[in-house]
Image 1 (cartoon, rainbow, N blue to C red):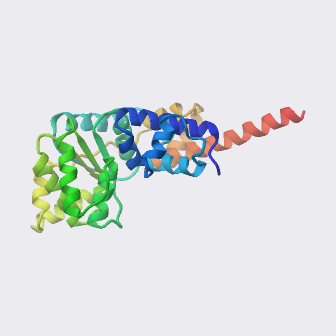
Image 2: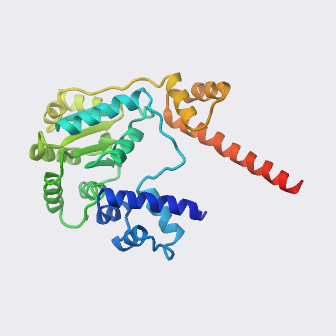
Image 3: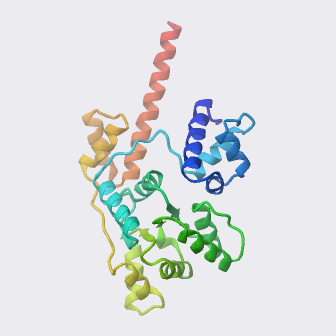
Length: 293
């Protein structure tokens, strides 16, 4: 489905905001397009840019204009932790089950603050592809050898004011990729904040490595303060805040969404979006019937 002109204008406005906040080169690298494309959008000369290109930019920049954030308990906890890590150049680890609002808060924090790099990891990455994605998240070129990329990344961070690196789904990385965190930490200790985040398997994996005296794990555990941070379970007031923020006010529907969530905010989002889609269809049908009448 092609994007509407209104949707493309929203993407263009966000591209301009990000380019003014950082640079056109950084936005281009993050969006996976050329700097010429970003320049056209910034200068409002994007008539020749296809809808598919706009869609790719929207996906790569992880833009979501329809969803409204709500300051639930875990959002408040995480936001404070991220701010503390960035301002004081410390490293922390968060190990909590999926659906507690971690990734959403990381994206929101990065959107609100300068010099924040957020990377969502994947199981399939090699060490080099991990570095390429990390550099792309920082808005940097992904060219060169593994050693070149590490050196350029560290050098870039040293020029930034109080940078924060959030490595999301850190548990999906292999040992050789995890080891890079120690290299970065050793170069940037006290200057750059690090957040290592994953599901509860992350804590289990690290502690198993520590207990078995596996190479690198004791060092990693030490660098995160020998502690894994847990979050709060999803509460009914949390779900109500999210529902209200996204236009759902009916108590019975809020009760249903909370009861159906099983403590997973992704299921909350899914049910809200299903309701919104049905509501939009009903409005279209009503409007059509009024026109026909």
